[in-house]
Length: 107
Image (tube, rainbow, N blue to C red):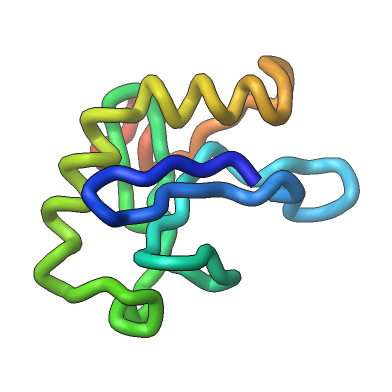
């Protein structure tokens, strides 16, 4: 599971991020404090764009609601790193972006 830690937050994605047997989910990152766990809040990641993917209760994952803005700033300033890690894990041909972070959409 590719992951890195900044300021005590764990940023990660799973090595089996498939929607089904043939389709990988679009580029995204999960964030928590402590050990990664399924269901941790996630953000769709594009080139210099992000969008919160769900409304998971962040307090269930060691985060505070007040942490969200800072976390989003960290993700946004590291989109290139996240995309690079995604490509290294899944390959260039498996790279796709969620519609909320594509160039023709606003995040």
